[in-house]
Image (cartoon, rainbow, N blue to C red; front, side, top):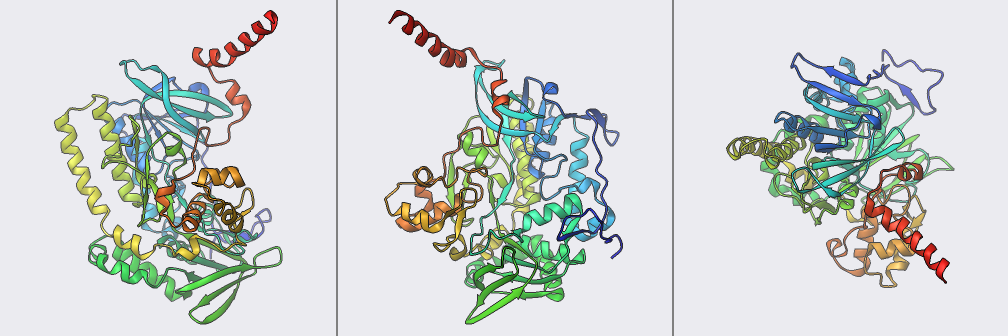
Length: 536
């Protein structure tokens, strides 16, 4: 393919299928589209205001839509995102994509351009490359006499507490853990990671590539790689056969949705261009220090597929860490086989002033996520008295209708691609916690001691204490413990999360401005101890 020339400096095992010039955004004000509005790009903690009406965490579809909706009603908005450019995972680098990129990555990816253009033309503040490590109640009252919220932000190596009347968490989703023998070998990575490399850097695998798992993203990535000229050896589908029966009652709703035709075209394209193995069980990745072969069972047959790279995907689940650290209530969703925050139709959580939108509140897809973000932004405008009840209800009803249309077919997808239990709860020898190298067998030993929940299991084993803070092992650990105890995961709960949920240096924390209460709590005790030593 044109543009696929190998470059001397490229990493081993990848190749470029195009060049990409990354625009380096300048700090300051920038207008877009002749709207008369401007977005202010913030690249330094010194440029952050001490307070905003609304802080939106995440710049994916939900976060972008929430910010645009809220700012249109005169709210002072700050959007904070870890990435260098808006779009989230689904729309990553879409504003820099060429026509060839858009053709390879598909129409759903291209649809993000319009949303990003609206965002860049809005009157709001945008801090890219920033980390939010905590959300909680403010120590002091806000200007209207109410107790507001405080958002811990790290930008450019400097931490700052930002006050906000309202916070919308649009932190998106994570790929579900997919533990089986060999999943930690070099040469094995997640489908999402491969997609990030493709979208952000134009990198695709150069060798024989195998995709394994379940879910729509598995087939979407397979089609994108095939269009980019990658040698896809096989797509190994681990979706349980009984899921077809479970999804059947929901097929009419799916047929009336926008997913149906796109899904059929996707399946046809992948089946036409590569080998697809359905009903695969008992996966094992093997190799001498590097992945080389995928072993699997299909029915009574044993198959071996050789390859250079194995891409895994077992669906996505809500990214809970920040919502739990903020104190939001959550529930076990049996259809998702995952925990999700407890929210109402407009995204309001159990914590006053904190709303959750998009896949962070439950897996709904990009279009529905944007509508949920709009509802959350609209509700923030009502709560802050920027719009009247009549205006709010008219707009809310309009958005609710759009959201209902976007959610058509989700029930079918959830039942059809629900991962099998055997791939969610592994055998004893399989590593569950990659950070601390804790096996499923070790977790079962601790479960046999009668630990009441995952937090006690964490204390015994350090499972969930590593850099990922349970993102790669939390669900597996909870389901494994639930299986050992014979109860539902919802009865056990999840890991207890506290800020900071992301790494922050001691220097950043020490440089934070401290309230009088905090100083007394620490320095006051020191002073009293010194006085006691003098008098003794």
